[in-house]
Length: 336
Image (cartoon, rainbow, N blue to C red; front, side, top):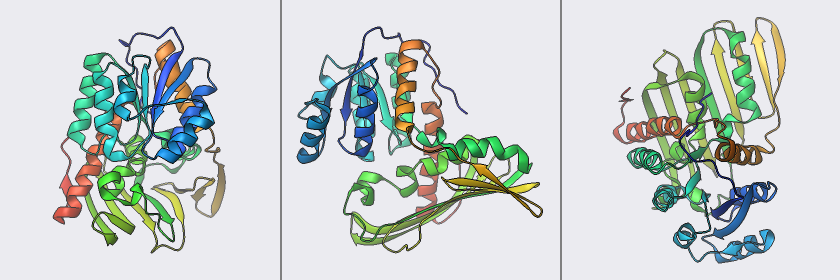
């Protein structure tokens, strides 16, 4: 697992003053985690929807900023947590770093890999923490996979399927390409599980299908990305959501020369010859709390984080290559 520590970042010695951009589910999980930790103080929030923003401010007894820019400019905020639409991650992170704030952002750091790369350089220049959250690496399924890999010997093929039926599909930003991004860019964790387990990708071939309602809104999408890793392993990521699906699926299958592993978020199995061994998978509960505590540990104690922004960027480049492959109709090689 990747480790990240900005050893040059000065440790904080006062309750860390935090602002949150966003008022949805993730923002609420962050707020609850911050309030429960004496090392942090939730100062302000900025949301896109007035009703949900007001409800959020009342639930957590926190000040509302007129805009995310106003929140970032506040002198009484040390850390900005970005939990809003994917399109805005990069520009908010950039402004926060320019205002000398630490930054925590939900993946992806940006929809544009070049922009993401420049943000990492800016954070280093400003001597500020830039943490791109990847909760999938902290979850029970991912860690159970890592603990079980040795049992199946040399892995040669992996397949990760996540299908989410929604009928009717919600008319929200996660179904708008301009706000969510290319399907597996917006859902970057589907690829990041692969790169964390098996390293760098040499090439990708991708196909995508949309069921459009209007030019910037669809009712369903299906994305199939086939990866070739530099170590020779073949991978396949299938991501779909919306009205055309009638059965949910969240299955990670790993084929090795000495066995097969099949995992869902709830359980795992090791299959060898005629035997099937069940594998326990820990609960997914509490991951936002864990991630938030690790950020505070990093800023207060200098403790390494579990993932680096460079690792997230590397996966973002794979997602961008997949997007280009879908447009060109051909395999795209990824520079090492």
